Amino acid sequence: MVKNLKIIKGNSHYDDRGEVAFINDFDMSDIKRLYTISNKDVNILRAWQGHKIESKFLKVIQGSFIIGCVLIDNWENPSDNLKPDFFKLTCTKNEILCIPPGYANGIKALEMDSKLMSFSDLTIDEAKNDNYKFKNDKWINCWPNL
Image (cartoon, rainbow, N blue to C red; front, side, top):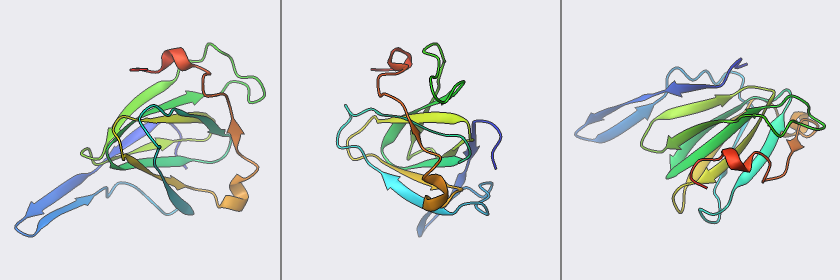
């Protein structure tokens, strides 16, 4: 289980056959499922969804995204004054954003046809009672480039 927001960086190897990209420091032993997300267009802000016990791991596989992560102070009525952390992830940077339990996150594609792969450490049955949604416009003034 991840304890803090962090980026795990990967690397790549090139030769005459092409490229092999890898993130060898990403320990997948706790991963139970994965899925991909693509927004219909760059004007969509998909926010805010949080988890008390679930960890998320995000990897851009096409295009780029801004990811917002905010540590929730009260799950029934979080403060309007919370300050999200923001990360720009691109498919050209081989890295994974680790989001620990206790955070809500939101995503915004920066390019058309962007795709985000999300890994989770809970099964869908385990996660169904750990899904908290907040309004898209909560903390909206904090988002860069909006």
